[in-house]
Length: 170
Image (cartoon, rainbow, N blue to C red):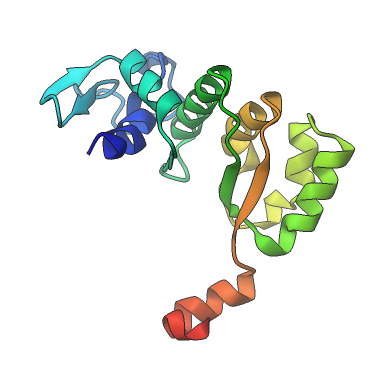
């Protein structure tokens, strides 16, 4: 249950970004914005507690609403905190297909700290995902900490087959 708290709670409010500085207006005025509920403790907990747990967790899965730039900023904050604690996790993106892995590796070797060049190398503007600028903070945090970035999605043709045929496509 604690792992689930880290996975979900960390994303929702683990950084010190105040609602008035958020980019998205979606639910900005909701009374629970910026609060983290710990079901095990049956209480709200401070962001620092969640960040500390994230730094110790054996694995983190950070999800988001793809079109919410604040979620990406929160993910970047968590990632930066984990890296600052000495951990060196690989950062996987479902938005990068395994068919782009070679291009990804080449770009990281040629310009390891150039976030915007990475977006261009991945043809992000043609990917169908929200604008690269929304995801940029996560890439910037990973590159800044020199963490490995990996492609998590199967090639598009395989993903389409899986969607149509289910697991039998494998």
